[in-house]
Structures are given as structure tokens and as C-alpha cells.
Image 1 (cartoon, rainbow, N blue to C red):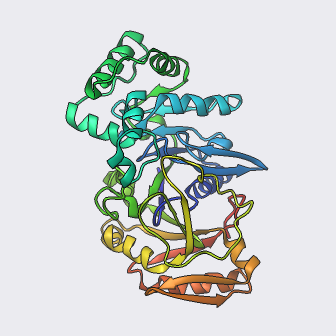
Image 2 (cartoon, rainbow, N blue to C red):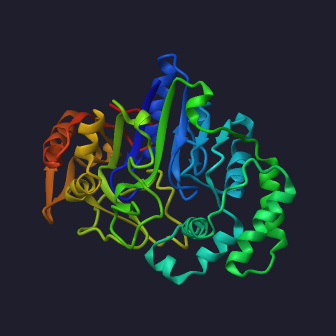
Amino acid sequence: MRHSVVLGFAFGDEGKGVTTQWLCQQSLTHGRHPMVVRFNGGAQAAHTIVLHGEEHICSTYGSGVLLGVPTFLDKAFFFDPICAYNEYLALAAREPALWVHPDCRVVTPYDVLAGRSNQQVLRHGSCGKGIFQTFKRFNSQALRPLLPFKDEDKVFQYLKQARAYYGFECEPELEALFAEAVRELPFRVAAGPEVLGYDELVFEGAQGLLLDMDYGFFPHVTPSHTGLDNLDEGSLRKTDVYLVTRTYTTRHGNGYEPTYPLSWDLTGKHESNVGNPYQGRFKTGPLDVNLLYKAVQRHHLDVWQTKYDLQYHLMVTHGDLVLQNGYLEYVFNKRLHRTVIRDLAGLKQLLVTLMEGAGVRFQSIKVNDSVESAYH
């Protein structure tokens, strides 16, 4: 069975969705049968994909969904049935296949309410999806999820446990909405993606390496492992790992502030994750090379590469902006540099030079544009 892993190189919003869709398209073109595995994070993802002019923002479903590729939500995923059902309704005509691990953590409306009213959570950074609260509740209550929980008595029992944990009064409308989502969302339960018979698994990461709960820039992190930690040895051996960055630095919400402002016009470049009132503003700046170095160092990607014979690939999105403007701006050792770029080959050569100091070997460097998922 083939495996590949897609990771955000810094703070997320880099193009993991288009990279995942590209990998699925490559797999289908070669006659294979892929499945996308969401192995961390939850419905706070906003992975924008475009296929033949159709745009979809994946939050629960994997980014192969427009190609008909099924999704598996693994045990470290935060599963919000309401978010999943709302996304399913937008995709219903495609009859998307969804599989769920029985041990994944289930987000309730009470987790969402608690997170949105927790000032410390909001200061540290939140998408308003209840991820941190669910993480904390599961750790303190030692709960097992109730999947499959098509039995509505068990659904309401689970909701009762959640609201009792926070000391909330019952919210009948929210509980009815949750129960409807569980009842109507078509999903099946399996102990792991490997048992389902697909010959290629594309592990689609959420957020970025520098938001990792252990290796990110604390306290502005997510309660999730955003690197390779959630994957078992069988999934890693001789695996291709795709590290995704844009041609500029992105950061949504509290935390890192770009050293310099970005001078490019991003109008019409599918910046979908920009309006969340809980998460804060969307920030952009020139490509910060030292941030990528820090991600490699903090996650010990050189050790992972040697131990498991990994093949790393640098995937750079929004390359058309460089060609359109005729230059790449990047920050190195806190200084702003500008290099004239006349063609794709020149951009790739500059990227090769910049990544020589990262401490890992890159098997390839690929660049795509801002809209479709074709890489060159």
C-alpha cells in the first residue's frame, strides 16, 4: 500500500487542500484507488479546493472529495457531527463516502459554547470550533466516544455528560440539531483505513508545524500534533512527505506577526479563511525562510527522514504571484531580500538555494498557481 503525508510547513493556510487533491488526481490517473485520511485537527480546517471551476472548502471531508475520493477520520481527529453534516449537505449530490474511527473525539455544541466564552482560549488563539475544550474534556473525563451512536438515547446521554462537565443548562435546540446530524449524516465506522482495501492513503494534515501542541510557538498553538507524531511506523516507512508553503508567509489569529508587510495584491486568490470572528485577523508577509528552518528543527524532521527513509518534497503554492510581480520577496536572518524572477525555473532554483540550510534533503520542489491544483 502506498502512503503520502501532506503537512503545513508553518502556521497553516498554505495550500494543503490543493496538494491533497493533486496527489489524489495523480493516484487516480495511475489507476489506483486512494483514500484521504484526516489524522489531526478537526472542523477548524478550511482547505479550499477548485476542480473545473467548482470551489469547495473542506472542513471535515478530505480534499479529494470533488474527485470522488472517500474520507477517513482517524482516531486523533476531532469529529463534530454538526459541521460534518452541514458540509455533507453541500456535497450530497456527490454522495461522498465518510468513514470514522470509533475512538475519535466527538465535539458537542457545549464544547463550542465553552470555547467561545473562554477568554484565555481566545487570547491564545481559537477558531471557535470547540477543539481545545473537547481536548480538555476528554483528558479530564477519560471518556470513550460513543461511535457508532445511532441510538438516540446514547446520543442524549453523551450530550448530558458534556453539559454537566461545563455546568451548562440544557439547550434543546442545539441538542436536537446534534442528534439530527448524527442520525442523518451517512458515515460508517472502521478500526482504521488500512482494513478498507484502498491501495493508497493520503494523510491530509491540518494547520501547520509551528502550531503543534508540543513543538509550536506556545501558547499560540493547537491541542493537536500537526506533524508526523500521530502516524504509526507502518504508515511512515519510505513514505513521501509533502511540506506545503505559499510563496509568502501566512498567519491567522494571535501569535506570530510578519516582520515586513506583503506588497502583493491577493484579490481573487481564493483566500477563504479570512473572516472568522473568533480566530482574529489573517496576516501575510514575505516568505520567512527562518520560520521554515525552525519548523524542521523543532519537529526533528532530519531524524524522521533518516529513521524512516522518508522522501521530503517542498510544495510551493501561489507561484503565479511571483511570475506576475516579477520577483520573490523573502526574509532571511530578519532582513528583507528581493530577487527578480523571470520564469518557473528561476523560482525553483532560488527555492533550492534557500532550502539548502533547512537541514533535510528535498527529493523535489514543485510550484502551483493560485486556483487549480496542478503542480509543475
